[in-house]
Image (cartoon, rainbow, N blue to C red; front, top):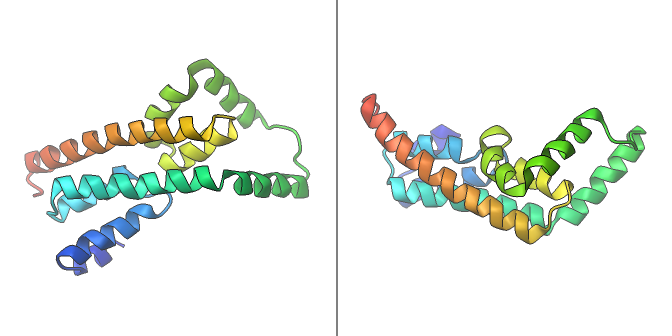
Length: 158
């Protein structure tokens, strides 16, 4: 995928980066360093990475009911109606720390899209999940953009 962005010229390079940033599991932790190494505008790369990731949060929030129904049918089909140890542990952590801490820490551990889906599955409202994931994405976008620009300059990669 990086080759796809490298081969594009001008505005098409930014469009290619945006399309890749929409894909699940490709968060600001991947998209921003790639854009910076390709010597794209740091501000544009940050905005593109934020928007691509935030769109997936919105998609999961909008279609959560359908995703939840699919998940429940799948679990019933497999005969797993009771909660697993992993789910019990996740719920305990969730109840102890809450959505704000989860939203800020989880993009670095799970990815923004999976974090949003997990928060919704644990019972948070769509508006709160979208808001806190948006705040978290802003924070991580700024951290990754500044860190990538100055970090890569320090090690002479750009």
